Length: 601
DNA sequence: GCAAGGTC
Image (cartoon, rainbow, N blue to C red; front, top):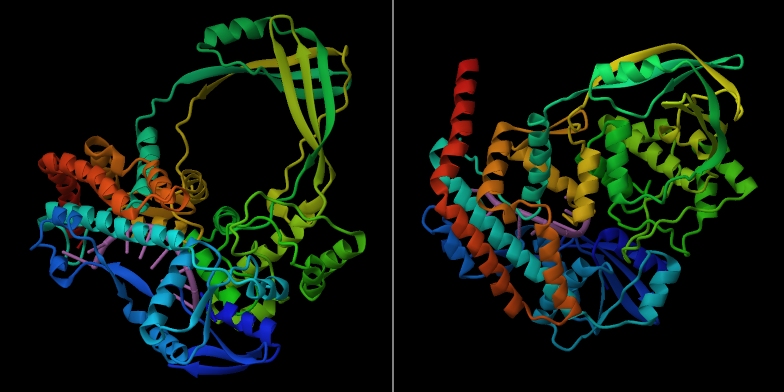
C-alpha cells in the first residue's frame, strides 16, 4: 500500500490494521499490519518519484542554441533524492501479491501512482495493481476506498507528464535565451528566468507599478457640511465630485435649510468566514499577522507534522461529513479558547460552507489542542510564528462554527433643494464570531435617530479640495487572489511563484507589499512589448485548458505537445528578432546596478 | 544554472 506521504501511510495502517509495527526500510518508514487475514505493509512516499530532465549534452547552455530544446523532449528520470524510496519500494514489491496505489485523489496523485507502478513493474510483473481513492484520511473513507479498489486513470497521469514536459521545455528555452542575451552583464551564478507561472506573476506586479508611475493625479472638490437635525449635529457630505472649486462653491452657497428625505436603520448579518484553505490562510496571515505566504506555508507544514493542524495544502472549503466537528471542539477545550469552544458545544453550532472540494484534503483545522507555552516549547526559535499561525487556525475554525455578527446599517439623506447630503453609520448589535475573530471586527460609527420630515439646518458648509489617487501598491494578499482567479499555480505552489521572483531579483516584498525592482520592470516591459503572450496573466489558464483536454476529450499528448511548442516557437522568434533592443533594455539596468554597487563599496 | 508540481 503506497501513499503520497508518511502520515497517510500511517493512517492506512491504523484504520485497516488497528495495530501496526513500524520498521524503517532504507530509512523509509514502513507500517506492517494484518488486513483481511494477510500481511500488509504501507509506506509513504515524499511526492513525485520521477522528474523530467534533458540529456546531459543538452545541458551545456553555451553549446546548444536554446531553440534546439523545442526539438527533443526531456526524459522521465528518477530523482536523485528519491533513491531510498525507490529501494524501499523495490524490496517490498518484490514479494507482493497485490499492490494498492493509495496516492492522493487528485491528478498529481494519479501521476505519482503511475510512477510507482513503473518502479514496481521492474521487479514484479505478476502483482495485481489497484488504485484506491479516498477524499479524507478518516476511518470511514479509507476503509470504504479499500473495499472498492479501482484502476489507474492513465489520462490524468498523462496530463501531468505533459505539463511537466512543456513547463521544463518552455522554462529552459526562454531562461537560457534571456540569460545568454545579457551574459556579459550578469554576476557569476546569476541568470534570468522565465516560467509560465512566475512570469505572469511578475507581469501583474509590474503592470500595477507602471499604472502607478504613469498616474496623473487630478484635483476635485467635494462639499462637506455640519448639519443640525433636532438636537443632533451630524457630519454630512455630497456624493458628487466637482471639477472646479467655483462650481462646488456655487452649490455650497445654496445649502441652508433642508429636510430629511430618508432615515434608514437596517439590521444586517455579517457572516463568518468559510472553512480555511491554503490560499486564504496565506492571504489572511499576510494581511493580519504580517507573515508572508512562504513563511506561513513553511510554519503550517511544521505544525502539521507535529500533529497540531490538518494537512495545510488544500483547496477544500467544505468540512467533510466524516469529520466530527463536535470532537474537534471537545479537543479545543484544553486551549486558551476552551471557554469559547465549550460555549459553542453548549449552545449548538452550524458550520459555514464554501464551494470547493479538491477531492483529496479537508479544510485546514486544528487536530490537537495546545497552549501558547506548549507551542513555544515545541518549536523553540520558531515559536513566535508557530503560535501565531496555530492560534489563527484555531480561531478561524471556531469562527466557522460561530453565529454571524449583527450590525445596524444606518443612512440619513437630507434634501437641500439643489443637492442631497448624506451620512452613513453603523452600530454593532451582536458581536457574534468577531469575539473570536477580531480581525474582521468592523468599527462602529453610529448615527443618531432622526426621522423622515425632520428639519435639517446646515450649520457649517465647506468645500474641500481632494486629489485622485493612483491605485495602491499590489499587496501579497491581492496578488494571491489574482493568481487564484487566473489559475496560476496551485494551492501548494502559489507562494513559490512569488518567491521565485524575489530570488531572481525581479521583485521585493516589503510589509506585505510586492515591489518590482528595476530589473523586474525592464524584463516585464520588454516581454509586454515583444512577446506579450509570455507574460499576460491568461497564458497559464489557456495552457491548463489545453492540458485538461487530454483528460476530458481524450486528446493525445502526441498531438498536443507539438501544437503548444509550435505556438511558443513563434513567440521565441518574435523575441529573437528584437534581441538587440532586449539586450539594451536589460543591460541598462544590470550595468547601472553594478555601478551603484561599486559606488557603495 | 532552466519550470512547476508533489513532499519533508
